[in-house]
Image 1 (cartoon, rainbow, N blue to C red):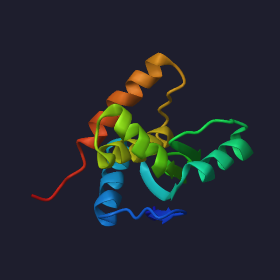
Image 2 (cartoon, rainbow, N blue to C red; image 1 turned 180 degrees about the vertical axis):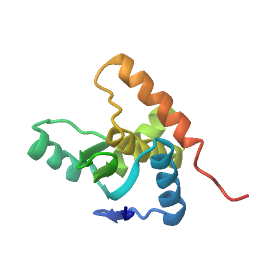
Image 3 (cartoon, helix red, strand yellow; image 1 turned 120 degrees about the vertical axis):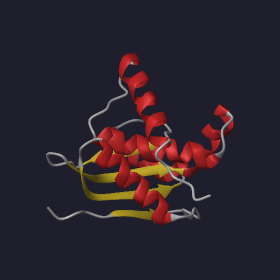
Length: 143
């Protein structure tokens, strides 16, 4: 089976630092869930861009930090994950965590959706939060 690609694009001024480190981490998370790596595109954008996607494709008139479009086939994860860096920054301030920590949570949140985890009710949300924490710990920083 051919391995897919994890790509990062930006529709705003945001630039992801250490792209390879993030790519390796996401791959480790996918493999830790016994899934395969397909083509996954992360698109960083602002609130307005994501709000328009939310309206157009989901008919939701709300601001959000992430929208994921899951195109997974079997156990091969693939799809597009849109992330509002504005919303991530606001949430980081609200939750009193640094931007990078909140960004990691949101980045992996999308992959966890592709793995089949949901956050539509309290029980599922609690499991999603535990999984996010577990997967964030897999992010390795060179010492």
